[in-house]
Image 1: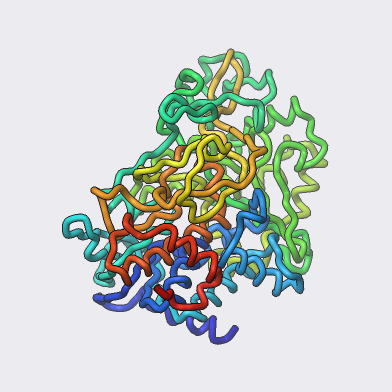
Image 2: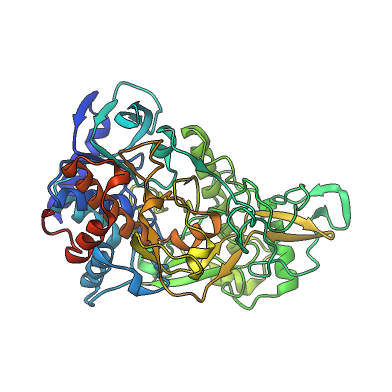
Length: 525
């Protein structure tokens, strides 16, 4: 553990070093769970690797609060992804474990980095991508915390893997992408586009106006004034982001939830109107989804029509610059912290709910360098690549099948709400979809590589080519790890055989992933 912490310190210090030019075989951008596994795979297979991230942590959401893993079907989780959950199990004295604490996950990701001697550049954002023809030649980075300065890195690589939640390397490489929801017509789908369903929905009768019954008084905070478009039609709206909240009710480890900066109780007026109609018996009765994790901690997720999801406040995030994104992230922090404080302290909240909320606090032993709050906003969806093959609802349900599968997905087609609107004079949420009941299905290799005529040395296993609703099934942390390993293995093959990413023999890749699931051996051709 001491070695890991020392290594982490040394890597962090790179954020303050002078400008450097670095040459490697493979550059991975984004230290998400998929990014760490991609870098580890490539290094284990004998390549010189660098991992670059604008964040100061590793593991993305897996170490950022999502400790109650969204699995779908464990059969789909293979290779190093399965190894990760077995390492978690080892920590807790079990064969494998899918529910865990944030710091335990991050320690395991750090261990992967240490074991493979991977160089990590923390706190570095993309500044520019330079191409020659269809090949990326080098990328330039700048400090993520300032957006300017002399501490710039120039990284030259043979292959690049974009494992960021935002798809920044993909976008700056002039690769086609989309944002938002396609219409159902575009890919012959049923659950894409605008959807008005009854899950996480307001009951009838919740008034949207500041003064009830008086439209002239204006709308309550968080409600959009735009009219609802045709069901199934496409738009550029995104499913809501939130934080997966790690709290504890352990008195020795608990820090009181205090009033956050920029607190505004009017932001939660809709919650009061919902509570008045719903009359919830507990926080889990339509307010917070409190998933318990080891050591009396939680992974709290959105629950009900007004919860931790900050609906409609993330539209500018995918294409936003550093400052825009920082503001959106801070707005989400203020909203989520404010929600917890409001429930526990506003006298208009029923006493039994306030008392229940006051049993929880921030854990002293988590996120020590970030005021005990997760550094990772839940970016459920951002940019999505458009490649030669787009994964769609048909793949999820089994209507469409691919033979070039390099990983499996199995989760419900899951979209959180995208907007909060007025329907017949009442508040309603729009966009939530939860459709499951299908078996695991393969993810096409073509969906993680760009079109042949756009870029020939880039992999995109996180912001992969998928429709909005199919991405809602694929976008789970274990799957990102599986696809990160697949991308890295393919990158090694492309280097060894001097192939474009589109020409990597998928049958050979499939064989390699099956025969060497832990990337223990160099590829033998």
